Length: 324
Image 1 (cartoon, helix red, strand yellow):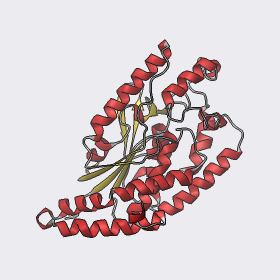
Image 2 (cartoon, rainbow, N blue to C red):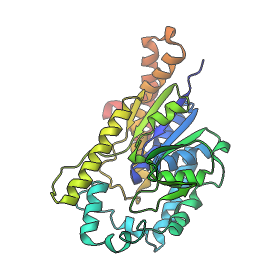
Image 3 (cartoon, rainbow, N blue to C red):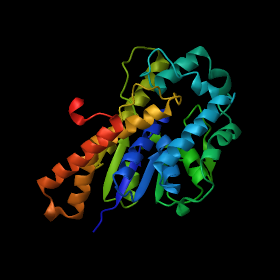
Image 4 (cartoon, one colour):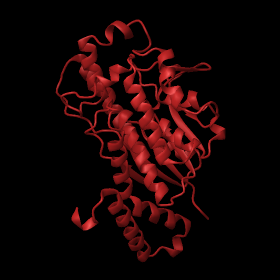
């Protein structure tokens, strides 16, 4: 019996574009994905792929969309101005502390829900997301959001795709909370950065978790604001590590050197995702084989899968494995 495989795509802002590279490798290798879960940008990528399982199509579509976005002069240019900080590994929380100190946020967020208005957020994100119900996607899809009204983790597996994805992607302070009924929703990364438990709740037998978040950067500043934001970051990373322990396979894309707000080089991010997936391809195939037919597992299968993986890796990198 074929096990149900779920891809759990984690949050990481721009770094989440690496998910498309992972999807491409799995697609090329003929690995069937029965369902997809996503958090934050992982929800966006997963939701798009669920509507049309074609990684190359979405790579081209996302790149075109980002090129159009970067040409428009809106408040979203704020993200662009963060692309080249002195230290790319500072992370979201350190950047927020710097922005508050410099006054970028103070005049806006002291009186409004977010730096970017609700109308502008919709104008930004809705054109990329198909206007359809989650129930109608080609692959079953789920995503995680955080209800700050009731202090709850929210899982979307039905309803409007645009509302679910925009809620999961609503980075506090930058994008406004999304209202859905009596819920007030923000980025799902605050409760489940990589949605492994969401995948289990959807009925997955095998969960492949894709982690694109960065590690904690060195703690250099010591103001009260820095300490508060650092404590929150530590809590979320600790929670994420606990949740990742429940995954069957963890694919980690090495994208921590790329700033979380740098959307300028999507092809580089795609490539990092491809390389990470290729490194785990043999492990993924072997896990599926073991769950499907545990009594037939044989060392020769692992060797055969490794040969296939090396051939695909050579195709992606352009050089034989022995030359690395």
